[in-house]
Length: 338
Image 1 (cartoon, rainbow, N blue to C red):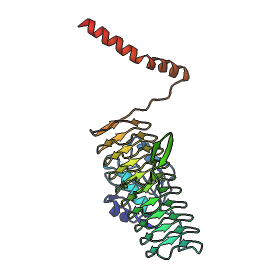
Image 2 (image 1 turned 180 degrees about the vertical axis):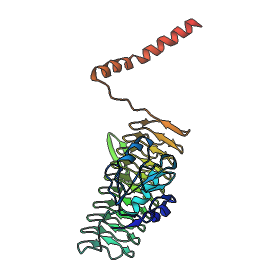
Image 3 (image 1 turned 90 degrees about the horizontal axis):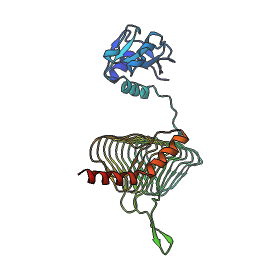
Image 4 (image 1 turned 120 degrees about the vertical axis):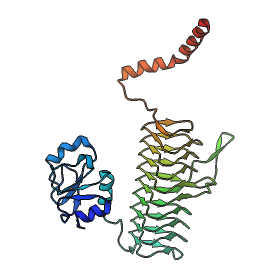
C-alpha cells in the first residue's frame, strides 16, 4: 500500500495545503466512511454539513467550501477531479495477470514487449503485437496481426479479433468483444447473403471500454474510437461508427452503423443513435433518448418518455393515435379563420 504526505498529494493536483502538510495518507474514502488515514472530498456544497462529522484525516475542498471544521485540507478548484487523480495514485486494484502463465498459448510470430503479463489460457495469435507493460488477463483472445499498445489492461475474457489496432494506456473490462462482424447482409430472393466485414476496429490512446461492450469491425472502412473516449458496460457500437475525442457513452447505449459522434459528447444510458447520421461536438444526450436525425448545434437533447401509471399510459396512447386527425382539424379551422 502506497503512502503519501498531504503536501505530496497537493503538489500532484496543484492544490494548497491548510494544516499538517506532513500528514500521511494511505487511502481515499467518502466523507461519511473515511478514517484518519484517508483523504475525502467535498464536490457539492449541499454536503458541506458532513465536514462537521467526518473522521477523514484530510479533505479536498474548493476555496468557497473550505471550513475550519476540518483541521487538514487541500484547497483546489476542482475537488472531484483532484480526487480522481489522487485515487489513481492510491489505487490498490491488482493486475489481471502477473508474468506469463504456462497455459497461455502464444504464437511464435507474435511480438511480446517488455514487462508484459499474460494470464492462464489466454491465446495470442500469429503476428500479434503486444506493447510494453501491457497486462492480458486469463482466457483473453488476441487475433492474428492485431496490435495492442503499451500500458494496456485487458481483464479476463476480453476478445480482440484479427487485425484490430489498439493504442496505449487503454482499459478493457471483462467480456468486451472488439472486432466481431458488423451486421452486414444483402437481401436476395427472400434470403440473406452475408457481406464479409473487411474493415478493422481502430481504438486510439487512453480509451476505457466497459464490461460486455461490443465494437464491430467496419464493413470496408474502419470503425474508429478516438483518444480519450470512455464507453460504459453493455454498449453496442456498430460497424463503421466514428466517435471523436473525449466522448462519454453510458451503459446499454446503441450506436447504429456509420453514425458519426463529435468531440466531448455525453450520451446518457440506454440511448439509441440512428445509423448514417452525425452529431456535432459538445452535445449532451439525456438517457433513454432516441436520435433519428443529425444534431448540428451543441446543447442538451432529450426524448425519453417518463414512466406513468398503466391507466394514464393507455389514455395518453389513445390520444396520441388521434393526433393526426386533430392536426387536420386545426389546419381546417386555420383556413376558415383566414
